Image 1 (cartoon, rainbow, N blue to C red):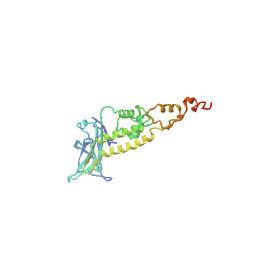
Image 2 (image 1 turned 180 degrees about the vertical axis):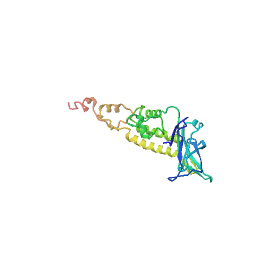
Image 3 (image 1 turned 120 degrees about the vertical axis):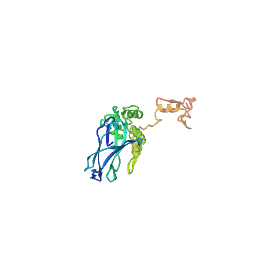
Image 4 (image 1 turned 45 degrees about the vertical axis):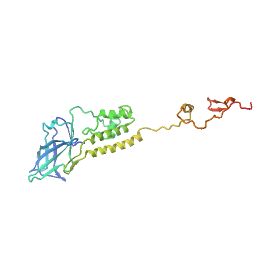
Length: 272
């Protein structure tokens, strides 16, 4: 889930942060603070040293207000940091153990839905299985899920191959995440490749479940009915074997097959 979600073109909510060392607020009385933002997919810097407002110096609270230029940023995933520079030229970055994640959504209506009830629709069940249930961190669209489910079950609303469809969706999500670049600034690092690996592992778990839950095996014993026997006898690709029931019947002496009773009839015999 992104730390901040915003619609493209919007300039609210502003980004806020508290500078901490452990659990202790950092006094920013003599500090200037800037905000930097990078595109998570390409690594391209989108905001460079954006000026921030120190809202409470003693408690280390700062705010970055989106500019008119920021409102034109393309929809997508971004990562960012606040950096404070003190009067002695030392710097401190927040957060100091990761990155702030920002998701900018397109202005068009999102093709994403989740009712919260996996039993309501196939889409809800698949979203539940793959963990894509947060509207603020959307991973795959409704249309994409419908297409995958149609490929897996034969119909977009089918529920006979939910685990298989979920497995395929996880592979798709992993492929999307694999295209996003890892980002490191000093000791700060956000690894999108770890997210991709996580979804590949989840895909394998769902694949195992699909093999167990996908259907109930029905045992079949062939060759025990007249129709099966006739089909086998007419199939030239089946090995006939060296021996068959009735192969030594004396047909000239009246031997024959009583097909109604399924027993061999050998005729009147030589002594009649």
